Length: 268
Image (cartoon, rainbow, N blue to C red; front, side):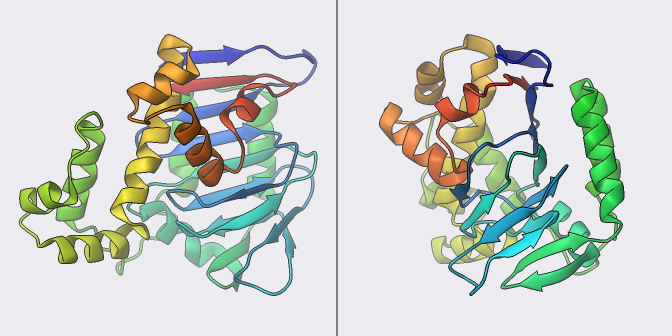
């Protein structure tokens, strides 16, 4: 794993941590202001010391809770208060999402909240926040916590969509066209776009942008230049990168990297 460290102004507080793996992404730490975002994959979030105030154009009244499961591509606003949060961006093929969904006790407009045995999740993530684990151990803990809690026979992975995702990830510099991707998996363009959205909840273009953001943060641990990392990941300029980053993460990259308690970013 490679590591990027932004220094802390308050050494008594644990730094926030961002773990970037191919399968999923995990953030643990404070988010000091409300964020409005629409991520490129489903997410599972647990507050470690307060309530999350969740609002969306999809429902009438805000929801207050300690844990939420948000499907891919849904735009929401979250106010986490001052308490640390644990946010896991789940796998793009929705294996994690379908495993966690039956454990959620309440749902409003496709957003689920209040997971069963919620306090055990809060206690476990609080322990991880106070006592930093190496990336390999943290990943193993998430595997046990999330993956196949309840196996779903209804969730089928289409190998053609899995192949398209692999092609996008391996050819980030080439910007393969949808026509080229469709040809490689022997599908028509309309059928590929339909299947991709059914499998992932996203349009292909949106997933491509999401993966570029992932690659830009991963590259940051190697060259320590946000601008160079963004360009290397395929963004045309810093403005395009900043707009996309804020739309999907709810904050600017500068905001992420200049937290008062510092941040560590780990990547494979």
